[in-house]
Image 1 (tube, rainbow, N blue to C red):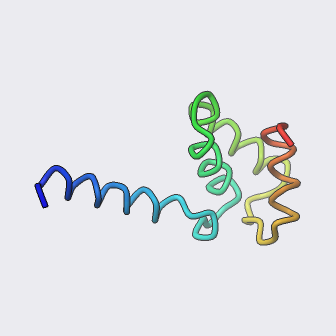
Image 2: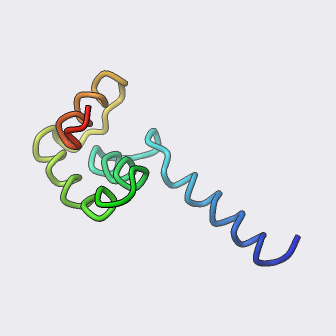
Image 3: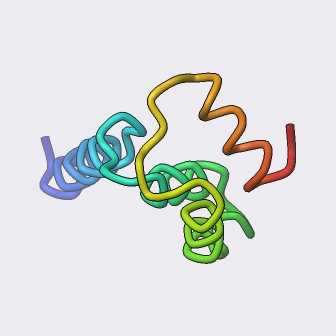
Length: 79
């Protein structure tokens, strides 16, 4: 395997491991990951979105799908 291909593979693995919603230690981290996954303007606004989410809902990460849907609908207002 060429070195460039190997580096790209490891970069993908690192990004994937760092963007797991369940591994996030705060709600802000979860919102940042979601914004990065959505891309575009969401990715650029991720810090502001994370601050708003923590201001509205606190710092504790969400643990249920129902809570996550509620947070997403308020923060991203797309659902």
